[in-house]
Amino acid sequence: MNTKIVTIQGQGDAFSDEEERALQEAGEILRGGGLVAFPTETVYGLGGDAFNPASARKIYAAKGRPSDNPLIVHIARLEDMDRVAGQVPEAARQLGRAFWPGPLTMVLPRARNVPVEITGGLETVAVRMPSHPVARSLIACGGGYIAAPSANLSGRPSPTSARYVIEDMDGRIDMIIDGGDGEIGLESTIVDLTVDPPQILRPGFITQEMLAEVLGRVSLDRTVLDADSGQAPRAPGMKYRHYAPRGEMTIVSGQTAEVTAYVNAHAAQDCAQGHKVGVIGTDETLPEYRADLVCSLGSRRDEESIARHLYGILRRFDDEQVTRIYSECFDTMGLGQAIMNRLLKAAGHRLVVLSGNRER
Ligand code: AMP
Ligand code: MG
Picture 1: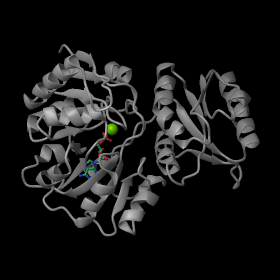
Picture 2: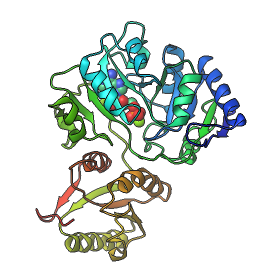
Picture 3: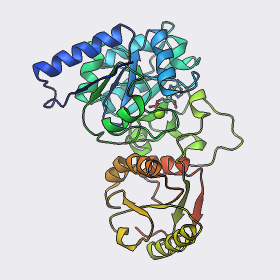
């Protein structure tokens, strides 16, 4: 298949005539049952018409993903939630008013007309209203309801930039819209509103603390920060191992000096055994590390930078065939919960704790 690649940068909510035409064309592709990859404020999405079961099947085929892993329905207007959800609890409206458009996905009871192909066979549906102007405009042009997972091949990190989407999806879908790099860089927060109290299934930029301010009580699925051995998955989407880099990854927790010393000692040993070693550090510690590839997530004081850069670094390590990876550890407060959730999953929960007192 020939994949058309277009660039739509826009100026805020305004688009040039050429960009408007490209958005119309993308909308027609979606309404005709085709697939379009598009930018959002979190990561790139791989979109199809949410009410067309054939589109869902194409999404699974393009990603190489099992078809019982549910997709998120993206909408552009608050009221459209009522067509997707069988019943909208007051808490969902409150969260919508507080955080939409934005990086929050709500799990609600499914409306009868939402195809089970989209929900992975579940009686619930995940809904989100993104804030990215290109995503919002595309949803409107495409008929109002776009089902989308992240636009990566199954087994690769979510794409934070169009070049990663092109790497994974060129030739597999109808169109890729390049709208620049994702501002947030981690997938949306997912909160399940069909249980009491509401439960975070996946942490993200909208933090537990922010949700609690609106909802009062919010619980956290046990698998968010703990290894999930033994517990039956609550949703098909949670039973699949998340992306894991090709290299064996270890997270090292402790005071700065002991972490760098530990990493350097192990990197030297690994190198001697023929490994290619990558280190995920921060601006503050970068000069201290000795390894084949040392990358900074940004400053430790800037969690948003850390979130934004993580997936790009993991992709780079895969591309450069790094076989051993060491990463620094982060606090799990605020956005740190999402960062550590992704890091722990990438590391298969391999965590070395050198001392209880982590220096910040
Ligand atoms: P993405 O991670 O961006 O590819 O979005 C899809 C993810 O959303 C799935 O892998 C699930 O983790 C989650 N999801 C979608 N729908 C549901 C649902 N009805 N219940 C629980 N999780 C869901
Ligand atoms: Mg994904």
